[in-house]
Each structure stands twice: as C-alpha cells, then as structure tokens.
Length: 258
Length: 279
Image 1: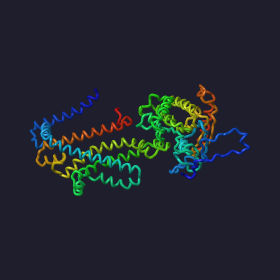
Image 2: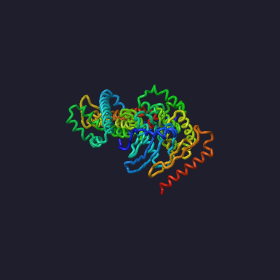
Image 3: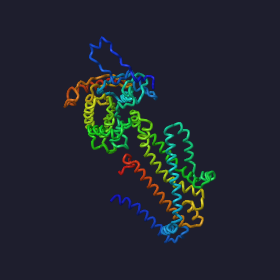
Image 4: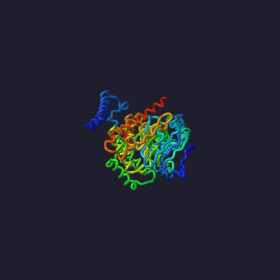
C-alpha cells in the first residue's frame, strides 16, 4: 500500500504539471512557436519519430562509447595511482586540469586537431566522464579497513590476492558511485560537445536536431528532442542505480532492500 | 628487517649436571626478551618487555589501556617489528605457514562475504580450495554454534555471532598460537561469559597456546593458567600470577572463594602497576 502511494505521488505531480501546462497554453492562446502544448510536442515526436530515432541512437552511441572509455581509463589510472603515491602526485594535476576545463572551451580545439567528428565528440565526452570514475576509484582502492589489511598481512597474502579479495571489493561501492555520476555526465558531455561542434549531416545526434529546429523556429521539434534527452537521462540514471545495487549485493547499505 | 629482530634463536643447551636433577622444562613457544617498541611518532609502547609462553598454554595479558598489550600481540604475530630486543614466535620462525591465528578487537569480517567465505579466507590465501576446506569449516562452524549460519552475511549477525565467526576464522588453519586482542570487550556480560566458556572448550578440543589480552580481572582469572600483569609508561610485564585451578573449570568456579581471592590478588597487582605509572 505504501509502495503504491510512494509511486503514485510523483506520478500525480508529473501529470498535474503537464495538465496545467496544456491548459495554460490553450487558455492564454500562446502561439506554438513560443511554447507548444504537451499534446503538440507528443504529436511532433510521433511525426518525426524516424529522424529523431536516428539522432537519438547516435547520441546514445557517443554517450556509452565515451563512458566505456572513461571506465577503462579511470580504473586503469586509479590502479596506478593506488599502487604509487609518487605517480599520483605527479599526474593528479593533469587529471584535475582535465576535470576543471569546460568541454565547451576545449571542444573547438579538439575539432581542429581531430579530423573525425565522431572521434572528437567521443574525446570531449570522455573528458567530462573520466574524472569522477578516477577519483572515486582511487579513494575506494585506499579505503580498506586497517584490520582487514592486518588480516591479509598475517596470512602473507600475495599482492594479487590482496587486490582481488580485499582492494577490489572495498573499492566497488566507491566505483559504483563514480559510475552513477559519470553516466549522467557523459550524456550531458555528448550533447554539449555536439552543440559546440555544430555538426550537420546524416551522422548527427539530438543536439544537432535541436540546433536545426532552433534555426527554423520549429519550437515543437526542439521540445520533442528535449523530451527524448530527458527520458534518456532518466533511463541512464535508473540503469546505473540498478547496476550499482546489483553489484553491491547484500553487503552494502546502498545495495540492501531495507 | 630491523636489526634487533632475530627470527631464529638457537636453543640453549642446559649444562649436563643440572639436566638430571631438574624436571625437563619445555622450550617456550613464544618469547620476548627485553623488547623495546617505539613508534615513529615517538610513543614508547614497550620498554625492556620480556615474557615467555609455552606450547598449549593459556596466558592472559592484563593491564591498563596504553600499556602495550596489543603491541605485544602484534609483535608475536609478525605484524610489527621490534625496535630493539628479540621476538621469537612461530610467525617469525615459519612465516607464511599460517601457524598463528589473530582475533582482533572488532570481528573484522569481510562485509561482502558470507560466514563460510570469511572462515575460508585464511585457507584460501594459502591455496586451499573451497571444496577441500569445506569439511574443516563445517566441523568448526558446528562446534561454535554457527551451523545454519554458513551463508549469513556479517551484517545479519549479532555481535556475539560475529565474534564466533571471527574465532572460527582464526582457528581454521589449526594454529599453534591464538592471539586475542580484547575480543569480547564490546559484548554484553551474558554473551561474554558464554563465549568465555566456548573459548575454553575450543582450547581443550584443539591444543594451542592462547595469548588473551583483556582489561577484565574476572575474565583473566576465569580463562587463564597464568596472568601477566602489565604496567604502562614504559610498557612491560610487572607481575605474574599462576591461576592454580583445573581446566575444565569446576562448576561454580566463578563464585568460589578461591576465584574471589585470585581476583583480589590480581586487582591489587593491577592497582600497584597503575600507581607506579602516576608516581
């Protein structure tokens, strides 16, 4: 009963907001190029389904491609940092610089140096998604309980045993938290990068659809693309939330059903 | 390795004349001879600390906090190096043979592994497969009242059950030495007494030397054959009391006059040790 009520309340708020929007547009007779009603947005979404789906798929590929590279790079660099403090001290500033530089600012440069637009977009997105994975994983690899460390020393565990049976399980919740942040960030990165690149043509993503529609004052189409982006973002968040619960299983409070 | 730490001590041969006259004294399994332990921060945990523990003996280390009781255990386990002096123990003579078990103040179970996997860990680290370890783990869990809990997660267990699992883990390799660092300090009195009984049962089922750190006089008297009283600043053994009561403990031992007398004797010694520190 409580669960149903818990799901019902946010849904009711959503529906209420949409109805209020629809009523406002109709009563105040707001022209559709200023603010389209939700019903019109839905119609536009349906009418342009084919072209939007292609763009959506492209944006999704960039998002997950860059995220996969960020996970691989982040975990690799984190392992090196966790093994060697001097290396961490030497290279952390570079990682921080990557993190603090806005993608919008470096994207034009990357577009000059990298010929393939897809590769440039991947790189920009990677920059936004990389750091949360790196810093969380480094933290996690160092978080092992001193008592557990003593235990592994007492039984003369090999470095490989220590990594597999102690450090990786300890780091997992930290990594999962980083992944949840980076999942959302990589979608934002993918869209931002494409906005800056201003790419046109067949192989383009949702950002290009929004830009196009904006040039032609096709406001309903802008909203339609936006709706797709929001839904994708929510789906990605949900996916990684589920994934982290599954990864952490029963042992961590985040993973428990209670 | 630090210069003072001599791993293998040659055994001293007794002179021929005295050998026949005296009963054979077994070589100590564990010995600390004038051990100093200073930490990089400058804290002196132990100064000229000496003690011996024979194979199969149950010895308690009793003392105020900060007297270096835990440091003694860590030295015996090979987890720390002495700054000066000699430490001789199985963990030093045969490193990597898992002949030393350690029960820490917290249960320190791996929270992501169930009871079975936690108890398996020491064997797993020395290359014993799950299947080969299963019979030993099964017997051990059953003897410690943990049967039916093999697949429970640590977070699902009470404090007492967690500590039982930690003791099972320390015993799984069949160690010669069991080191226990105030293992029952955080438990309620009833659970504590039951675990004391169970520990003595375990000790009599599988002979091993136990070094038990506690700040409870009652616990030390109930469990041990011998109690070493430690004083602080500098940390060292200041008194030694033999507990001349049989194992298994006779019924009603906890309430007997002899028990009370031993407790008084130890309390006085402990107070003297603490007074010496203030002076």
